[in-house]
Length: 171
Image (tube, rainbow, N blue to C red; front, side):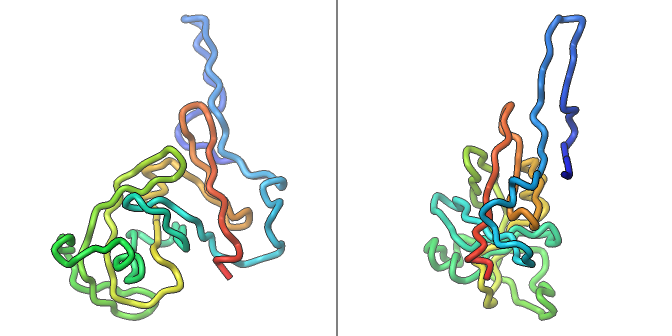
């Protein structure tokens, strides 16, 4: 069992005010693997609500430092070049190739009840994914993930919410 908790103790006691607050723990147990084919080396692929639409095949990748949007999603959201802001760099090395960037766009990304504004860099390159959410999104939501369990967990109030990866999409 591995337990991860960002910035908050699992139990907060305030004896001066006579109250006790219990904060949920973001943890992954063996039971969290139920429903996955084990062993595996699959990526964590989820469905998120982006720009008001349910978007499948979104890769969760802590190794990326920027959020990426691929042409399928760009076209599916009916975005136009006028919707894009310039990005500081005209090129990005991605997947060992230099990729020309179309621009940048800020869109709301919703996981459950949690909505975060995300700056996506729009690239003109093929990918089996529609988008990549990276460290910035994970940190904004306060999320942790484990690819072994194919889950993302994040605090929401006094609860722990989770996104379950779709293993068949990752294959």
